[in-house]
Amino acid sequence: MARETDALIVDAVRSPIGKKNGTLSHIRGDELSAQIVNALVARNDVDPGQIEDLQWGCVTQVEEQAWNIGRNVALTAGWPVSVCGTTVDRQCGSSMQTNFNAAAAVWSGQLDLVISGGVEMMSRVPMGSNHGSMSDLVTDRFDIVMQGISAEEIAKEWKLSREELDQYSYESHARAARARDEGRFDQEIIPVDVDVPVLAGDGGGTATLTRTRFAVDEAIRETTLEKMAQLQPAFIPDGLVTAGNSSQIVDGSAAVLIASEQKAAELGLQPRARFLGFGLAGVDPHLMLHGNPEACDRALAKAGLKWDDIEVIEVNEAFASVVLQFLADTGLTERYEAGDVNPNGGGISLGHPLGATGARITATLVSELQRRNARYGIAAMCIGFGQAIAGVVERL
Image 1 (tube, one colour):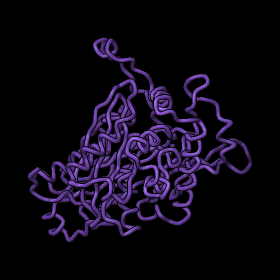
Image 2 (cartoon, helix red, strand yellow; image 1 turned 45 degrees about the vertical axis):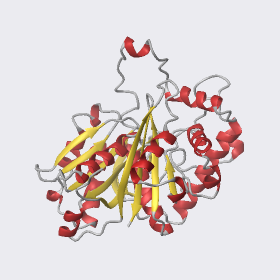
Image 3 (tube, rainbow, N blue to C red; image 1 turned 180 degrees about the vertical axis):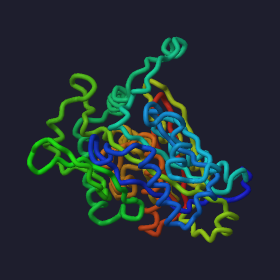
Image 4 (tube, rainbow, N blue to C red; image 1 turned 90 degrees about the vertical axis):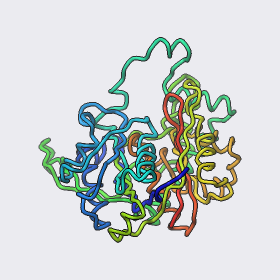
């Protein structure tokens, strides 16, 4: 593909991820996102008025997340009205799609400085609260089910055991805890200020709003395989998928600053990486969650790379069965065991704030490439109703 310029990743950041009904449940998504994008431009010494567009992923676009939250994030941040914004819904892949949109706009020469990212406040705006109906022309062709059922179907078709799912999930928490304790997330996390209600010491039930600095992911669990084995199936009797081997319902926001070469030079920016290519895959809407290998193959082809070139691999942990299916189909199980796939945990341990996760795993990927002094990485995510998306990144 002819490109006018590289799509440079100047920086990629995220909020700490808040557990369900935890610290971040006390702040609106547009206000949380405003803190993230303001910190992103501030630490790169960029005038917000230079940003041409804010591409924002969000899945549940109702209530506080309605009315084009992408535009509202820019307005909430106090930026000039000239800064445009739009909201994208590709389900779980929403903010990877905003990466794709921003990179394509820069590659084509249409835009020079864009922020991609997303938000999902799953404590405040429940998943599925924007539900609607589907045409009979779809339901006559496909047995449309919830994602948890598809996760069960994948476990069955790929002959995965409950023990394998739980072992993978336990390791996810262990890797995330180690990454947290070793400071691996420090470069990507933007501490945020939240007004948290605190009960009076007399136990009288009166709560006072207390300004709280929130800086550490709070969904990572100290668990054991024995505890995980005691969890009941979440979706079907005698099933294998539980709350313990599924991604967690959480709150969070993430953002990526993307620039053309000319704009980066003009502003004196020091890019950390660049996007090389993206891939999309459409798969059976019933099985739904197994498209990551195909999306990765297409992204790698666009980038002119092969799996042997890729040093760090992020695969969204929507469910443990999804990642184990990916490893089986790509032959990357040994790479996972060596710590090259999801080295710092993922959606099972950190949580999966739907609209923010694509940008979140991009931030984690760029930081990990930098930590290892590695060159190439890829991030992939399955998507509801039968899609997947992947993006290839080169560290600079």
